[in-house]
Image 1 (tube, rainbow, N blue to C red):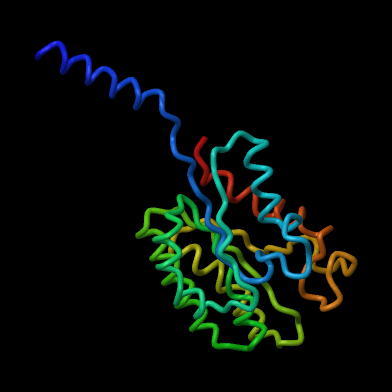
Image 2: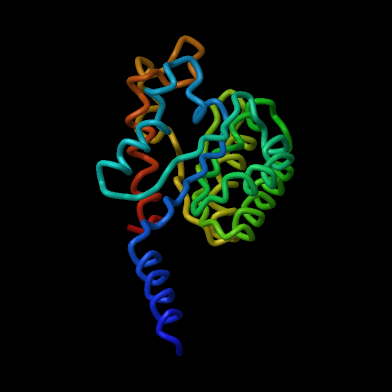
Length: 205
């Protein structure tokens, strides 16, 4: 091999070795609970996640594509475009609460969530599904089926699960805004604490 070509190959290999790896991306795909409804954007749990990743030495960026009021059908309609644009390594799927609050059929919610999980996996992402629960006034049959849907999906689709985003805080009225549905800024670290133990095993340092 001519000496000039060898020198060129050496320079290329040296550049590739020295170039930093591209930052990986976590896509948070949810509703108002992840969009930071009613609080300053930099105090939401998604922004706190960015800070924790940096503090713990994880080279990930966070893309928040959450929309207040989003249902699973709305999420399904736009997820392919978001996946193409963001190209995430991990997808945190936090949808379903608005389906439940509107009393929509649980079978439709499960079908939509399953389709989003399949699309995220096909795009090469690991998935963390976030479970939710409903107030008791929706009746035991509906609330029980709703809460159980997330665990059933996680088992069937073999994805990680946060059983309940608001675990440990749902009965603490002082952590919620006046609507009784959306956590205050003081409640956001607790949301992150519920997500983090299930998210961390999906990350690569």
